[in-house]
Length: 341
Image (cartoon, rainbow, N blue to C red; front, side):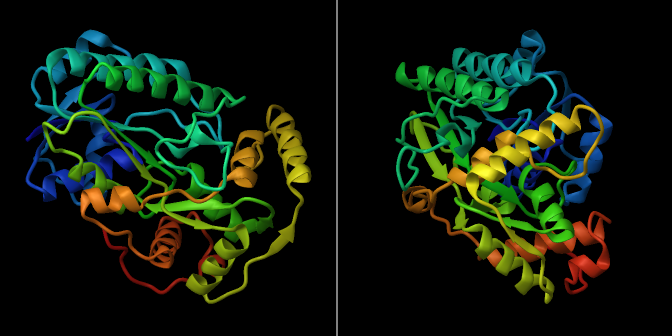
């Protein structure tokens, strides 16, 4: 199948391209920076054989030109703004999304796969997040743009368009082009310590997510929603998993949820004046202290797959962070060896 992939020079998109090639699909990559895309794709084992379409997803005409060449689309492009300052959140996460999903529906592509996020359900209303949980009303700009894009995708589904929405949790694993979100959190936790507080984190291996996206490419299935949060760990369990991977003992400090929110708000203010190398923001703190497990079993059954062990994901993530110089060798403490793609 000829598949347009947006966000192919990003973490999820690049791994998705590798999974598509392995599954025998023919990807066409919509990218803003071809040189960057080629480098990122080489890291995940995809050589120069995949064609590129240079365009910005905010350019409706350029997006349509790319969509017209394909039978399906995986929309993985997004601005992430939970732990760091993001770029054009509205332009990418709302206008760009509409350019891709809306025009794909008008052109009759099937399926239209949208990579959303479990964040559209956070803070959750119950002890378990499912694909049918109510959408949240986030206070932060990132969350608001993701929920806005989600509502648009659902409107397409309501009219019968073959939109498949996938809700990943915190994505980890090797070969992240620019550290952000959970991967940056792992780096900071190993280097500076883990806040042990309420809530937890859902850890999803980027390679498992890529496999799931490739398996979503089934035409004729109509609208679908797939929850894929990954393994839910408390913060103490995540620290323990890092200790097991490194053979050391990372620093821990107990922080009540209210205190973490307050400290994050102070950090946000200080970061406006001078840079601080710690990925805690008020938005990230809210995610940290309210996250609950996700119901992934229906997705795994429908796609015929299972998730790799979370400790394998964490070990590979830390090994890659050390290989790339994001972690000092003494902090990483991981066995030598090339990380698997």
